[in-house]
Length: 74
Picture 1: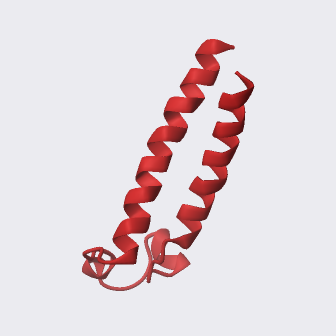
Picture 2 (picture 1 turned 135 degrees about the vertical axis):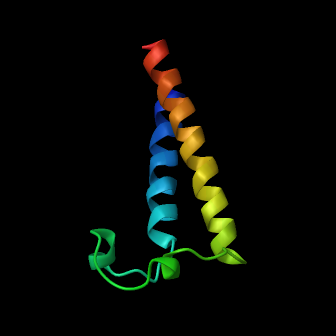
């Protein structure tokens, strides 16, 4: 049980780091409906950006699985 909690904390730190490492060219104003061309926010991920995106997705899924496991075992 304690091991799952430590794994959950480790995955949470990795998840935050993965989200912060993702680079977007959109400004904060465009997140709330303002600014520029709508097609500029969509692009093909390549190289390191694709690896970070995929790793973040995998870490998020693992985090959810571990969180449910901690909930069910407590």
